[in-house]
Length: 276
Image (cartoon, rainbow, N blue to C red):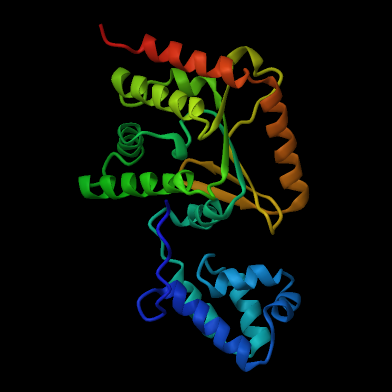
């Protein structure tokens, strides 16, 4: 189960941001709904900032400062509250991941973080940051493992992952690490903690997505898409672009092997990695 956030405003910057937003809003005699109308979002969205469940946004903080007449107070607190264990370009998406109703991921090369084993995650981190210290590597691995807590929560999002066949064939960390990783994915699928499909090489002429894509849907907010490349990421909330990504994902889902056939392929390839 995911750990509850620290809500003490004197020890947690995000909680302090939320308490200050609430104080300023109440001093202005405005409800969450009234503030939301002025900055073009829902009352629920404002409430998530006040309750420290959503990471503050700099542009939103600027709008809130203007509405509440607080100068640059919330903008300064926002910069303090936006500290994160993960890369800055992914931090906003990491927060949304915890709030999502469904997470649909497409992986063209590497296993999605939510399905990674610790050994596989360590191999990726060492490969991506060859000059990082061992402490830095372990800190990044812990951050990856911590993200998987969302799947153990009773209110966890539904995870649907499409793995391009290249993911299975790229021996990250060596044969034994890959065997362990593929069997782990298969176990997640068989225990219904995730729906997993493999897009075989032969189907790439029917559906192909060049980069990692994660489509997240929510109970009380529009869907968003997160895409990631080497050392960079982008959170997309433009409705037209989100719809385009959703259609591409649906096409890949239709072209992929069925969940049962995918699990059988995962287990078969895992045996190919077995060291005699």
